[in-house]
Length: 522
Image 1 (spheres, one colour):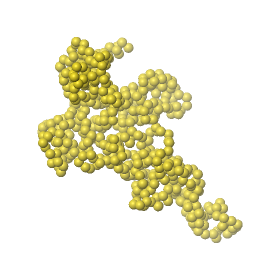
Image 2 (tube, rainbow, N blue to C red):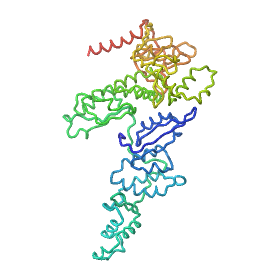
Image 3 (cartoon, rainbow, N blue to C red):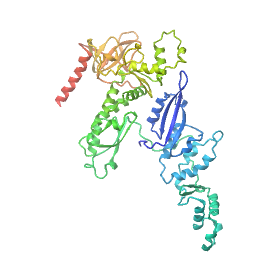
Image 4 (tube, rainbow, N blue to C red):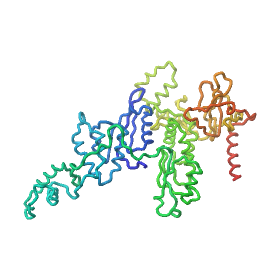
């Protein structure tokens, strides 16, 4: 289910660990797990979710929530409640209003808050309550009660006496007996409602859960020419990333020659910046699948950084998003600053002498200087933190009058000859030193080698190595380091020096030539 029907707007706030103040983010409910996770990332609250404070700003189905105090602001409970509310059939919603009216009337914002447990339970069993249509006031209710013989005291009264009866008074008695509520042109006798105890206040009821094992998914079907009946009725969700041969099998199931010939009807991504507008058509589904594969191996920190780049660069296509994902290491990111002023203070503290007392910055208001500095660096302030330009730096000292930096789309390629090696059954380049991002061509990826403590051999390959750095390798592949964060090396997998030398630009060009030869062979 793609939660398009949002009914509740929340404000989340989390206290800053340093320097006081709060981070804020809005969240619309009902929400998928990845949407809640994104809000936590924007409040810098990942790992400390229990410290987040929640306020209800708006609820279009139940405005009363904006003016009362609940006994809990658990996101899980509020999200479950929002799902239940948004899924109520139109005919049951007035009944819900009626049976909860007394709950809200009895609430007191100080001593008697509204129970979220009671509200959740009131979304069940609503179909058991009878509803009288076209009855909107006491007089109409009185006539309805008489005509349907609802009051035993009126039995035996002849029809000729009806005009002389006080219909409003009869309606008042009936309403009292029914504990009835008028909702527009409906009359709802809530006395017939026995609130079920579906939720015990501890364990939320089991509902049909949404799949979570995807980075991107598409609701796909065949074309009308190849599908009997309505293609939408035959549509299925494809969870990406997916092996190419399995994608081909789905195409065959829809009587299509290629998965790109299919049609998609819905789109969902765990990265909110990746939208259906960026995707366009099924002709790009293979690119989308590659992008999903990149997202699926990102750590939580990398996902946040990825979102920041997409925001900063206003990425408009799946191809550009894939390019960002494959070059994510070329950006610098810091999550803590949420204003230009905060970033400026962090920048000064980073570049100041270690003897400098950072408390001198506490009372400084430097928004203008911060915005000017961001421009000089080519960096961008996003909801997730500050992201550099590609191949840029966040805390590199820059002169006050230096022209504003631009995104470094063109790579500065080193012409230094590097050793050609084989490691993990892949050709690669080896450098004794560390390489700067601007020295590495597009399409190559840098990883660090770790020396054993005695310096005798290479024992691991990692994204970055501080102590025991044994060199840097340039590879054409993105490595998956798994949960451990490194790949151990043994005698069979450690670097094998092949006795050749190449520049990074030559190595990158070799890859392009290999691909061209493979295409020509096809």
